[in-house]
Image (tube, rainbow, N blue to C red; front, side, top):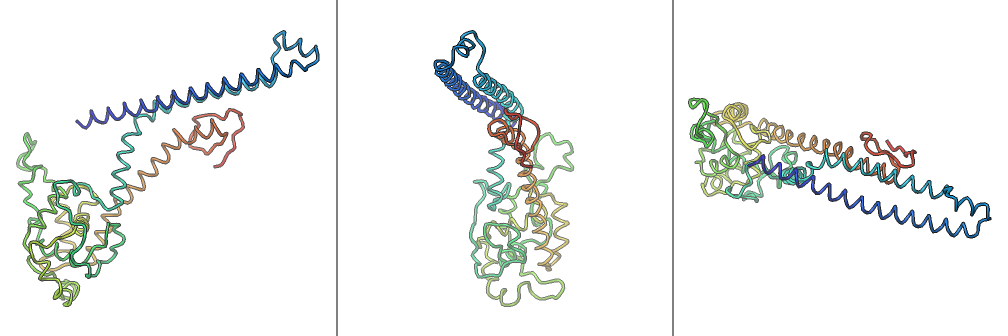
Length: 339
């Protein structure tokens, strides 16, 4: 189950943190041993050339100042490092594996993938067959893998008459689940991939017109050049165009509900009309939600890993304080503050 996999990832994360902590501690102990041995060796060499009064102080157990300072510094550093690693392992160990998985998904989203529409069961069309068609307005703001072509959007809109033409809502998998609380009003969730299959298999009902002018969308030349192709059932509608339409009502989600679909269709698709500018604005607004989520996720990661990993490391090993909490102390007691 999902819960079991998350628990396993947290356990693996803590094990990896503790393993790294053990290695760091062993390295620190080796360095300390080297420092102690070196300090003793230097002390013995100095004592052989000391006056007898100084040799007597060394023999009677009065510590050399350099040796004491070195030992104190290294043992304090080891203690502070041990405490910092223990806190980091307790608080942040389980974050690493889920964070890696989440960042992979985030990178895929930035590169143009969409939740619920890029699994192996859904056919992928990555290149538009209408490459010479103009782009829709503000196409670059959608951050898609390739520009969204107007002819491809028309191929989709020309297959949508109303909310009922988008899906058979009452027969969706979510509406047919067992033990529904209200079978008369089941959850109707349309996955992105199913939407793509539905549209590609739907019949083209006609080239839409601009409701404000009554002229065909894109102009008569665009219609003359592409209507025959986009009306074919075999026309390969690319994923980027389908994602742009789906995001107008899903806002980055992997599912759509009939109420949200209906609201959007009433805004830019009514009868045979298609308001291209309203559609483009809705597509950008839907995509911007995903962008805001990505920016928020990155900000949270910077703060968390800054507090748990980066800032303590810089304090303990380099006497540098960049803020991000108080975890870790500078061994010298004099931190160089940057922020």
